[in-house]
Length: 143
Image (tube, rainbow, N blue to C red):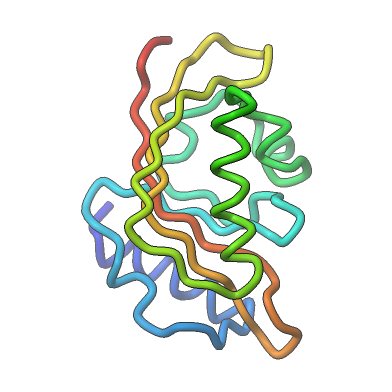
């Protein structure tokens, strides 16, 4: 899938959410980045097109449970990631994070992933911040 098609896919979803936040969010996405949109409750709203190559969870599981209950991280690493996400949920644009953690699917699959958090953007509409857009790099370490 081309970069322009991916941008159209995410842009269309942002419009459906009524996003009125920072414009040009997708200008911060590089080739190979994984882009996902989450609700304020940390539930995945829009997986990236490549997301399913990093997980064995069903779409139903991904769309109904908070991401942190599906992917295990060391508690210290989880604390760092959640602190960055909290900034985005408070309306702050957070760029150039470059925090790398190892995570695995919680007890379901031994797949180990290297996840590098790059950017977080608040998703805002007329109601305020309704979620966040996450730009990251994901690499499968083992299967």
